Structure formats: C-alpha cells, structure tokens
Length: 383
Ligand code: MRU
Image (cartoon, rainbow, N blue to C red):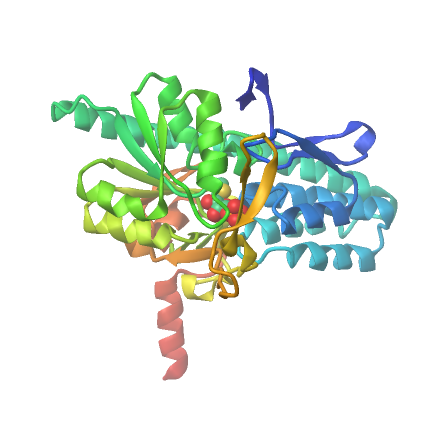
C-alpha cells in the first residue's frame, strides 16, 4: 500500500540475502521508520516485542528468520532449535506454526548446503503468496460490502456504508493489502461511499495507531471509537457490517482474535449486524477442533498501566496512566464462538462459519474425517 505516494510492503528483502527490513510498528503512527533484521534472533525479537505484529506478517517474518538461521548453521540440530525458539515467541497466531512447518518441510530432505537458499525461496513465496491471497480476500469481501450498500440505498438510506473493525487487520498486519481492511480499500477505490468505525483496541491501541493510520493514508473516511462504544453504535443503527481479522480459526469455526472481538460479536448478534471474519487459509488450524483449545497470550501488565504517545514537542513518551501499585492482567486475545460469526471471507471465497463451510472452500486441507464421522467412529469404538 502507499505511504506518501510510495508503495510499501511491511517486509522486504535486503540486497544479497543479508536479511530483511520491516516497518517498526511500535513507532507508528508518530514515526515511520524501518529496521533491518539480519539474524534469526532479530526476527524472533521483532515478533516478541511486536516491532512487527499481525498473524500473516508474523508468519512471513518467522519464515525469513528460519532461513537466516540456516545461513549461519544448516544442521538438523539448528533447524530444530530455530524452529522451537521462533515458535515460542507468541502462542496465539497459528500462522507462526504454519510458516515454520512450511520451511522445515521445504528443507528437511535437502543437503545442508542447499538448505539456506531453499528456505529463503520458500520464505519469499510465503510473502508473495500473502499479497495475492489478501488481494483475493479483498475481492470476495468487496462483493459483500457492495451488496450491503445496495441494500441500504434501496431502503432510501443515502448515508455511507458504516463498517466497524477491531484491532488492525490491514496491510500493516500482513505483507500487503490486509485481510479485514482489504475489502474496505477496494470498496473505497470502487467508489462505494464507506465510513469506518475504528475500535481504538486497548491496551496497545492497534486500531487508533495503526488502522487509523492506514485508512488515513489511503483517504478512507473513518472515526476512532473507544472499544466500549460499538454496542451503543449498533443499537442506534450506526453500524451496517462488522469485519475483523483473526489469529486462528479452529476446525469447527471458532475464532481467536484481539481481546474485545468476542464482545463486538455479542453486540452484533444482539443487534442483527452481520459479523464477518476475514482470513487467509494459513490462519485455519485444522489440527485444533474448538476454540477452547486455543492458547491465549498474556502480555505484560505495563501495556495496560502505561501508554505511549507524542508529546506537544513531538517527542514520543510513555506515561503511567493507572493508579500506582495496582496490578493489571492482560489477556491479548479472546475466542468468538462460530455461532456468532455470519461468515468467513477467504481467498477462496465466502463460507459459513462452520466445519462444513471451511471444508467446502478448502477440501484438500483438512485431512481428518468430518466431526460427524469422528463422532460415529467414537461411538462405535465405545460399544
Ligand atoms: O497482537 P497483534 O497486534 O498481533 O494482534 C493482531 C490481531 O489480532 C489481528 O486482528 C490478527 O492478527 C489478524 S491480522 C490480519
């Protein structure tokens, strides 16, 4: 996407396979700076401290991290060590495990001296595929937004289409385009009047700092709201559609995403507002049956008790905002049950938020037998 007229991806290769460069998202929206990652440890640190974040971008960065590890030592021991170290950086986004497995599968049966190039090429494929996958998510989501706008206009309502989104599932969370924001960009570019309610998304404010930054740079009409405002806006018919991203969708269709997503889904359900989840197939965890099994990341209390912002003199500072001495507990994600999700917007099309819907779009991905068959087999086994 473009910043000040210049096209950017969130991650790009340095010359001579020296490493990669990424936009430092901890400095946004106050400073647009990039940092070089020239080792596996750099990549792991950038994921852990959220220099980069967002499920698809975490996957792409980890893939390059693996390649850089193999550049330094292409042994099986180092392959496993790098895999395990990168895997433990953040637990919820399944793209991390997906990307690490792809690199291991691409190199494990290769001679050591071929592993670095094979891993680097696979990481590049993962990044390039993500751009095309997100563009296709945008196209399938555009159809949903266009239909919603046409329905609204047909009711004689001349207001723009109001879309609510939570956290940042834009191009900054991927390699380009984004997931939840891709349909919004395409709707805007195709002339559909659109207005976005941007949840600030405490405690790290990915909405207020990253989503608002992206939408502003693309000229999309938007307003930041506190996380607790969405229900009220829905009760007053100010939200036509909700679109969010996800860090992991389980085989039954449950959705893990930034903390607060579940409450938005409940409010949408209570007010008959369509609630869509946009995702690449790399975010589907076919090995995990239900949301209750998803590991939820807990992060530092200081993310809640302190906040970073720009001072009047332009300097960026972190301030304490809570009562001194009080503890804070910081779950980073929650799980929205499939029953509250209107549908999934994927690169292969739109489907119902359930196992059958996902299997229809991705028949070759889930090798385990359908839950019905598993239940029957289990009962037969119990007899
Ligand atoms: O903690 P973050 O910023 O990595 O959380 C990101 C989200 O929850 C996004 O919604 C999700 O990763 C989807 S990104 C396309």
